[in-house]
Length: 317
Ligand code: UDP
Ligand code: MG
Image (tube, rainbow, N blue to C red; front, side):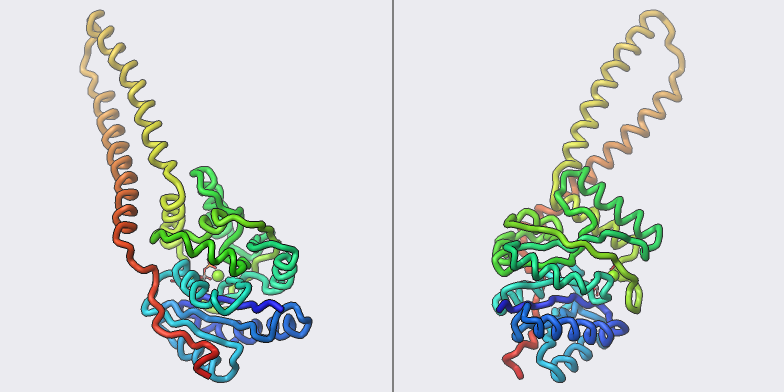
């Protein structure tokens, strides 16, 4: 039977952990009972440098029940890195992993179906939100806009799929080969390949506590995603440059004609407008190119994406 490890990144999740751990435990027990997964399966909480008692709760859970394990990162590294740290730490001990958020906004009943799909031969199973009824209009609008912009910018992401997904050990081994520092999991997983499928579920409200993704972080996340997956923004800049060049030729002809026909007047307005427009555009273009250079710079440093301080595994029982 296959060993399943649930990987749950947690950042200041003190309010939800007691409830989350109880619900996940019930789910795992029922899966074990119905012989879908091995009794050696585990629930792993990754503490992403929380400032509250999250780690104490995780350690406590681990001492009470060996079903719970904990990975402690040396500091806060953000959701994507925490998730990756968890997956990389446990991959040697299991056959399949499922990653999900600590607030259980993603329906855990979809786990059954994910495991079934794995048994049908899928190495990756994406959890896709079929409805966002409980999200506020704002969250829904920004989140769906995010997927659309990603697609338009040439980044291949699964629509309405966050980081709730099953990955087999084989898929994880594939992902480990992607050594980039600017790692954007949602974009990298489809690149790994292998047979994949999706399961659909309705997204719920957060159990307790508040979202760790305010608008500022969401925008930063979207920008990270676009610039680490695609170079389309640079191409757009070149395209804009070409268009402006064409316009300038037209303007040149127009100015020369005006000059020879003697219509030259104080063209103050048009000059001002073009100076500002072109100046702004140039700054924007330099900024975007700078963003990519910054990324190259970070990649060249080969910094570790995370540092595991402690792993509460079966061994230390
Ligand atoms: N998270 C994390 N590190 C961070 C921010 C968030 O590990 O720096 C975790 C958080 O504990 C949760 C998941 O990422 O398990 C998703 O966060 P949240 O539910 O706040 O995001 P939302 O669902 O509002 O997009
Ligand atoms: Mg959430």
